[in-house]
Image 1 (cartoon, rainbow, N blue to C red):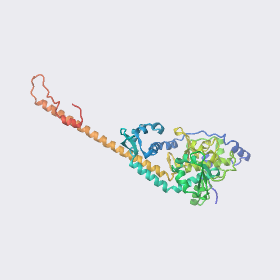
Image 2 (image 1 turned 90 degrees about the horizontal axis):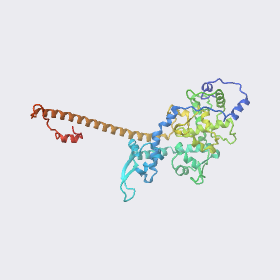
Image 3 (image 1 turned 135 degrees about the horizontal axis):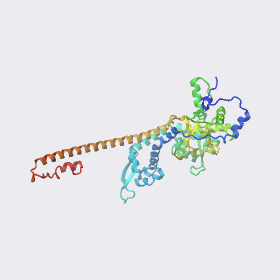
Image 4 (image 1 turned 60 degrees about the vertical axis):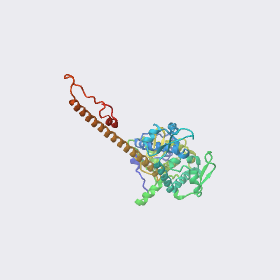
Length: 440
């Protein structure tokens, strides 16, 4: 039995390993220079495109949520139009509905009993079916969601996290909207809610520690590889620097030495670790890796992560971790928002490490695509009908001209020098009226 890393450090860092490094120099590197070591940010177009790929359906989801939050899940069309700016909708609501016909229906109703009927928006039958499927998927994966929530608490200091903060990140991790009402009370063996949610002084506390949940993604992958190969594998981060990425020599040496440190589990008690130590840096990277791995899309906006500095003992300059360890993370600036992404979860612009709850997103995208296919088919039929009508009109015009020419040939001339044409102004009037053509 022997240890083997997931990666060959010298090949990734493109440097020769120096066997003789003094302990004093190494200690100085990790304690005094961690915050001073800088790595230039480099744009990754593929990972930025992964965020762009989700732009359309996320916009649709915002509009759907706006309608579903209304009393009776209906809203006057003109009221929804006034919320375009808040919804960040670049087109009119009617245009949006035309482009996404599977989401909503329009109908006439009165805002007040004696007022004139106006157009209202309500969920379509297809959208209601999707909402039923969404509820079923959430029910089937409830244990999985409970495990996620336990893991978030197990990594936190004192095993406690602000309840309001958890509600704020529910979409990132796939938690239900009524997390504290529908899910937490069902599992008193795991969770205890302290205080009143919504007042900023409520906390969710872990009641019991489950050792099965205390295994990180890094540790699980090492165990799986060990069972497949029969070789003992040391847990290590999967480092994959993007093409063309260059590190200065001092940074390559720093990363090489840092990677050789033993892996520190994010579920390990870190209360005795110095905030500026190399071990704390190792543990911080492990926590970020685990948080991103637990998220639905393996990416979380940096401002949201910053809300948990106290719970997870992040430093004020925690975001530099994502550029300092560019082979593990990528910090996207797409849309003017800093977003931390897990590199290993993506292949070019496609997410390959898929969460179980992403089936909900797949169903929603299918609903959108079905509506767009139906709309494209309707437009095709309309174009074909217009083309057919134009061909009929052209044929009728041709026949009319031929008929007029024949009649002109049969009419006697009153003046042999100047022929009198037959007046055909009223000829074929019914035909051209039906075809919708102008007078020839």
